[in-house]
Amino acid sequence: MDPTTEPIKAVKLRHPVRTAFAVVILLLVVLFVWDAATRDAYQWPLVGQYLFDRRISQAAVVTLALTILSMILAIVMGLVLAVMRLSDNPVLKVVSWVYLWIFRGTPVYVQLVFWGLLGTIYRSVTVGIPFTSVEFFTISPFSAIDLFWLAVLGLAFNEAAYMAEIVRGGILSVPRGQDEAARALGMSWRQTMLRVVVPQSMRVIIPPTGNEVISMLKTTSLVTALGFSLELYARTRAISAQIYATVPLLIVASIWYLLVTSILMVGQHYLEKYYGRGVAPQREPEDDPELPETETATETTGIAGGNAEAVPPPKREHQ
Amino acid sequence: MTDVPMVHADHIVKRYGSHEVLKDISVTVNRGEVACLIGPSGSGKSTFLRCINHLESINGGRLSVDGDLMGYRQRGDKLYEMSPSEVSRQRADIGMVFQSFNLFPHMTVLENIIEAPTRVKGVKKATAVATAFELLDRVGLAHKAKAYPAHLSGGQQQRVAIARALAMSPKLMLFDEPTSALDPELVGEVLDVMKGLAQSGMTMIVVTHEIGFAREVGDSLFFMDGGVIVESGDPREVLTNPKHPRTQSFLSKVL
Image (cartoon, rainbow over all chains, first blue to last red; front, side, top):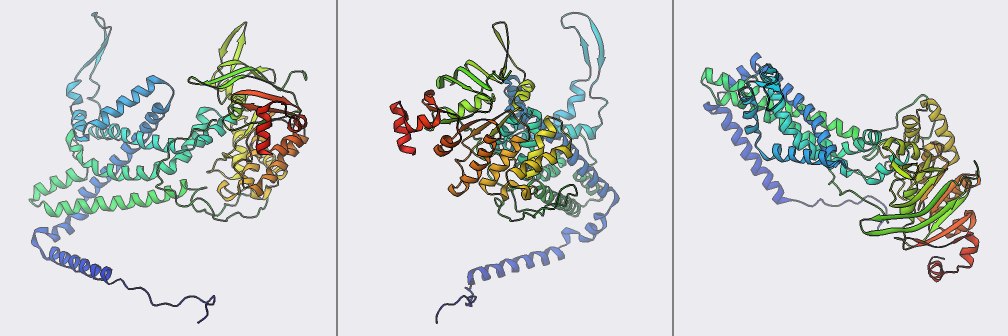
C-alpha cells in the first residue's frame, strides 16, 4: 500500500501491566473506603454533626485570618530582607543574614513559645540613660498585645526568613540586562525595582509562595504554643475533649483544612496566569480605546511554560 | 556652544580588580557625528560604551558628555561623586541600545516605549502615546504596538528598542553591537533604521562588527584592541589602508 497523506489508522498499543495495576489500586481503595464507612471508631454521625458546628466554622475563619495576615506581613518583611541582602550596603547585608540565620535556624514551635513568654520576660522596660539614675519612663511593651496579634507576629517573623530567600531567588532570576536597560533609560533604583525587576520576578516568586501559604495554613495549628486557642486545631481538640471523641473531630478539622487549601490553590492559579503574561502563552490583547485599530498580534510563539522554572544564576555580561 | 564636543573621553582607565580593561582611552565625538568602534571581543569596546553613560564607573581620566562630567562634579580640582538621582538624570539624555535588546518582556511594545518618558520625565500619557506611535511609524512597527516582545522577531525587537531609546529624545545614542544577536537576514532592517537616524543628524557611537555600515555611515572609526585604541581616523581611509599590523590582521579576518 502506497503511503498517502491520509490519517494513520493503527491498532492502539496495549498496556496490560498498567491496566492491571490500576485495577489493583482501585480495589484497595474501595476496600478501604467500605471498611472506613462501616468502622465504628470513625463515628461518622459525629463528623456530620460537628462539621458545620458554629464554633468550628468560626475557628476556620480565625485560621484563615491568621494565615493571610501573617503571610502579608511575611511577604513585606521578606521583600525588605531580600533587597537588604542584595544591596551594596554591608551593614544591611549582615543584618539580613543574621536575621535569616536565627529565624531559619530555630524551630517555629520554639519561636512561638518564646513569643508567648515575651510578656513575662519583658514585664517592664525602663527607658533612661545607661549607667546613671536618670529614668524617663517604664512600660510593659507586650502586655497590651492581643494573643491573636502575637500569633500573627510569631508566624510572620519566622516565615519572613523563608520568603526572603524566595524573593531573592526571584530577583536574581531577572536577567541583568533588564536592570541595565531601565537604568540606561534614566529610571531610578526604586523605579527599576518596582516597575521592571519585581514584576518579572513575580513569575518565579509566586509558585513557591503559594506553597508557603498552604504550609502556613497548617503551621497555624502550632500557635497553641503561645497560648492562643481560637484557631481550627485547638478548637476541635477542645471540643473533642468535652465530648470524649478524638477521631471524628480530627476528621472535621482535616476536611476544613482541605477546603481552605483548595480555595487557596485556585487563587494561586489565577495569580500565576497574571504574572506569566508576555512569557507564557498569551491572552488576547485587550481593547484600548485610545489606540488606533491595529492588527492583532496573537501568534503564540512565546517561551513556553514558565511557572516553575529553575532559577538561573545572575548574568553578568562585560567584555 | 556648538564647539563643545558631544563626547569627550580623556585618558580613560577602567579596572575590574587588578585587570585593566581600558588603558588610556581618549576619544572625541562631535555633535552630529557617527563614531564606530570595532575590534575583537574582549578589546574593551563595550565596556567603554558603558562608561559613557556611567553604567560602569571609570577609575581614571575624565569623561564628559555635552560638556558635563559623567557621574562626578568638579569643584576646584576636587571631584565629588554624584548622587544616584543626578546620575539618572544624566542618563535620561543618553539613549542606549543593547546587543540582547533588553525589552521589558512583561510590557507591550507601546508600554515599553512610554514607560521612561512618563515615569522619568513626567510626560503626559496621551503625549507619550502619540510620540510612541510616531517613533513606531519611523521604525515601521506601528501595527505591533499591542504585541508583547516575545511575539516579535529579533529585528523587530531591536527596532522597538531603538524607538524606546528615542522616546526620551536623547542627544546621544549608544549602540552596543545592535545586530550581533540577529539572524543574518534581519540585520539589514536594523541597519536601515540606524542609517536613517544618522541622516537625521543624531550623534551616535556604534560598537559593531558591521564593517560595511562603518564604511558607509561612519564619520570616524576607532579600532580597539587590548584596552587601547590602536588606530583611528576616517573609516574609508582606515578600512582601505590600515597602518597598524594589528588592524590589518583583524580586518583581513572580518572583511
